[in-house]
Length: 254
Image 1 (cartoon, rainbow, N blue to C red):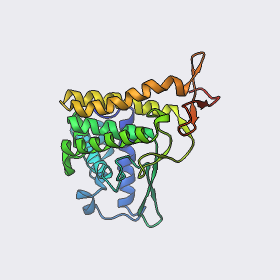
Image 2: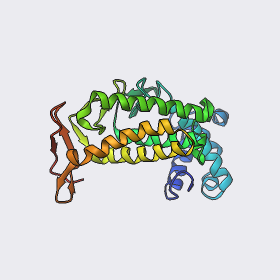
Image 3: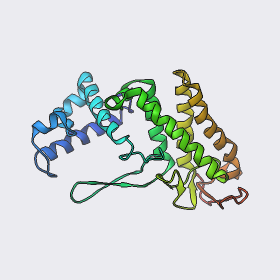
């Protein structure tokens, strides 16, 4: 569990996954028989709570299965837009179908970027994330696509200095609200820091530099956009498009 999630998260996640899949299996939610769970997405029915909590080998197998199926989300047209930016998620319709939400925000990008960096470096359990669809090479392909999307975003919205509001993913970051949340962008910045260094360690220095440039843009804009003075950072700010970069900062501190 320490290789992927904080130990305090692991029992909760395991309990949810095992319990919910068993509910489907028993008919609560329109499930199927146990045979369908052997190779299908209801893999959690193959594990008991005791195994997930107490058996290191079975716990690792559980998380490998979990990541393998999570990797199915990290595909263009499912969890990723054609622009390369990540969708926020999906609505579950009454008939069980998923309806993708086209909006997203930088905290979702941060999660995706960090997972892709781990998958590219084959570091620990996240190495299983894209195993069924190309493994490390697929992770690098997606990272190159994301680097291109971030470069386009900076070019089209220079007044934001790389900071991202809630945005429309298919349009490569078209803002869907005027304000920018500083905390979400802090998550993005730390993720970019991690991605750049992870890629450098595996010899992908050119790609690492592309992410480092976005982080540098955020560094240079951070004080101008979000610092309120007296040691306080705004929780949110807004900037008029190409309006000289003067930010309107929230009264609430971050």
